[in-house]
Each structure stands twice: as C-alpha cells, then as structure tokens.
Amino acid sequence: PLPTQGSLLYLDTLRAAFPQALAPRGTALLSWAPGRPYAPAGWPLPTLYCTPSEAGALPSRAVALRVQLLFALRARALRVLEAGLATELHDALVALHTGWPGLAQDLALGRLSPQPGLPEDVRGRLQALLAPDTVRAAELQAECARGFEGIVQRLWPQLEVLVVGTAHGAEQLYCDALRQADCKGLPFYCPFYQAAGALLGVNLWPEEPVPRFLLCPDWAFCEFLPCPAKEEPRTVLLGELWEGREYELVLTARPGEYRCRAGEVLRVAGFHKQCPVVEHVRRESQALSVRGESITEERFCRSLCRAVGMWPGARLVDYICVESALLGASSGASAPHYEVFVELRGLRDLSEGQRYKLDQCLQEDFPIYKSFRFKGSIGPLRLHLVGAGAFARLREALGSPLPMPRVLREERLLQLIQSTVVS
Picture 1 (tube, rainbow, N blue to C red):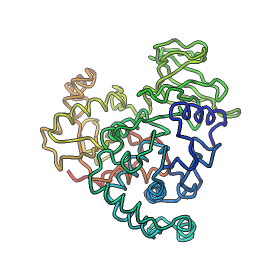
Picture 2: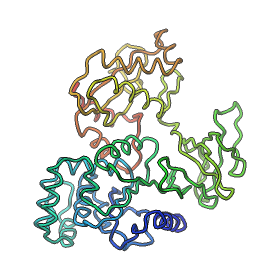
Picture 3: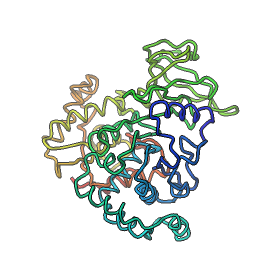
C-alpha cells in the first residue's frame, strides 16, 4: 500500500474539502490490479469502501470494472467515486453505456451474471454479497434512458468528488472528455504523484483544476536534471530547485534500488513551507522521433486536437502513435514516418484531405518536422481510423494498470491495434 503518511494526508485533505467524503461505505472503487487486490488511496480506513477488494483482482480488466461498477450502482448514497486511472473510470462508464440493461437486470435479481473472465468460485463469493433491489434497477433504467450527459451525478445525487489516482499527462484526455459529458458538474481530484512505483508527492489543493503536488522529502531520494539538458548535466537536490523551471526526475525509490532517470519532466510551480510544489509536464519516453526531431506527447496531442477540430462533427476519443521502424518491412520503402491510430465519434471515415490535415498541423507547429518533410527525410504521416472499443482492448492487452502509452514500442501491441483498423 501507499505510505501511511501519504494516505493520511490524503484523507485529511479530502475531509477538509468535502466534509461528507469519509462516510462509511460511501466510496466506490474502480481499479484493476490482476492477481492482487489494489491498495486504494484511503486504505487505512477500509470501512470507506463499498466495493469488495476481490472484484479488482480478476484476471480480465473489462470484467473487473463491470463487477466493481455493479457494486457501485447498488450504493445510491455514494460520496466519492475513486479510480486508479482516468482510463478506468472512462472504460467503466463506457461499460455502463453499452451494458446498462444487463446491469439493471443483475441489480433487480441480486445476481452476478456468469461471463468469460469471471471464475465461478469468485462469482459465487461476490454474488453472496448482493441482494435484489428492484427500486434501484428501475432508477438505473430510467436515468440511462434519458441519455448519458451528467449520468454520474444523476445516478449518485450525493456524490461530492471523483478521485483519480492519475489524471495528468496521458490521462488528461479522458478527464476532459468525462468533464464534458458523463461527469459534468463534478470536481476531479488527483491526490498523488507517483513515478517508477514510488509515491513522491501529495496534492493538498483538491479544488484547483490543474493538479499540483507537494514533494515530500522522506518518501524517496529525488534528484533533478535541469531542462533543457546540458552537455555535462549535473543533478540538483530538492533545496536547489528554482520556481518556474523544468527538471527531469532522477529517482532512487528505496535503499538498495538503482538510481535511474524516471523519464518524467516536472515544473516547479512554487513552494509550500520550503518544500517544492510541482506540476507534471511530460513523459520523455512518449516523445516521437524518427530523425532526432523529438515531438513531445503533450504538444503532439495539441496538434492532433487542432486537426480533429477541422473535421466537422468529429470528437477525439483516443489515439496512439507508432514510429515506422517498428513496422519493419511492412512499412515499405518509404522514408521514416509516423503512423497514428485514432478512435473518433461522429465520423465513420476520413478523406485523404482530412488525413493530411494532421501532417499539415504538425508542419505548422514544429518547424524542424516541416524541414525534414520538405527535404524528404521524413515521409508523410499515415493516419488510421480504428473501431469503437479498440483502445479498451489495447489496455487489456497491456496487462497492468499503467497510464496509457502514446507511442507503441511492442510488436504484439502494434498487431493488435492494426487488427482494429476500419479506415
């Protein structure tokens, strides 16, 4: 579990901002940790949770989220909905969109329907915790029949906050989509900053829209490389950081572990009682580079969103990129290039002109990319449209609950996403 000090700070901050948030059995958990129960943010107070820990340890991610959603739906008086990742909250609500009739039936009958990925012995134990609730089932049917904008607030009218373990970086896309639709009107709170499996900081400002984290000096040994990196970089320590500057994190998480560059870039937003307060900026491992051009994750996402805005009626659901070297011979004899896989709502096909808009936006936003394109050193970007649910399948195949990658590095995952292309 998280360090006790971190969880107690979280619980105190949560109670101060949302006074009813610590009500017994008033928190539902949506998180997948295959093979082992996930330690929730408030683990020192296990009576907070109405979802059984065994539900999150199921071998199938989709089944685990559906079972946890069913237990959450039973509790109309929820105060907090907690997810390990924004993608888990997003995919659980997609399961609600597509499977609410079955969920309503299970609620009414007090049962857990058999399904692949749900071992029968586990199903029996979980089903023993259920009881028929026809009133709640009828309420679920009525609210879903009205549509899904603001559905979370309507299903749980006493809900105060959505707690999401990771809501920055790659997960920000899902938070933005949820704020505009299913979770409209509800605040998001990202309580912790973690890297390389270590807890490094806590967010003491839950009502602010951009997560900021107080770095706690005793939780891990952190060093920082100033950005941009110099030819002979020298790390600095917590007491040597400057407000407004960006640093790459160098981490030694526990005694005996190797010192390593965590691949995370942070910006110092200020100080709280002499300790630095940081904002997450980017993951260096998710930069695109086929000729040394290094297009960062957040800047590529901005260009992609700008291009999608030029496609009438389209809304970006998800995306992932591949550098052509991973494709091997299948990429043909063309110059190195990017291949981008997107899931959209509102468009079933893309014209060649629409596909070119993304390459055009990248050229406008990145002069070095434009220069390589003009010289022919980088080939035209190739854009593929994938079917609904493709990224949920990809997250299942990742095999562990990690923030969504934006650049694929594994052939097996590339083959999976290629198999979902519809245009």
